[in-house]
Length: 172
Image (tube, rainbow, N blue to C red; front, side):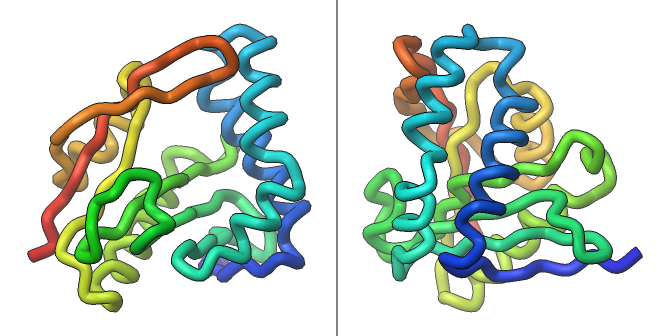
């Protein structure tokens, strides 16, 4: 089995939409209403929006593939593409998702290592992300990688106002 990281282009919009919807639902559907989930999916993962995101100069997407099959993805942002103003020395991990059948195989670690590598290559001294306060597996994963909470912000899922914890890791 060969695992590779593949940068995305706008030609990957539909594949990105499919994996985004599948992995987001797998991660959050059980804790949210169907209506709120659908409203979020329609807003966040519609094809024009994803295509536009793939064209943002300060954002990068990667598929993680095993034997040619897309099994997860990563989205990172720097500069003005970050969802919070964290300054020029920071890289944001905005999305990191693995398809359900491939979880617990070290693939999340492969993606977070890629994010750290990208941050270091861009001379960033901080890597940060937001994680839902009730996503215990993700919180444990990031804690294992040395991320610590520094703040929180609101995340809106349909009509539900939720809290994302903001976590950071110094690379200095």
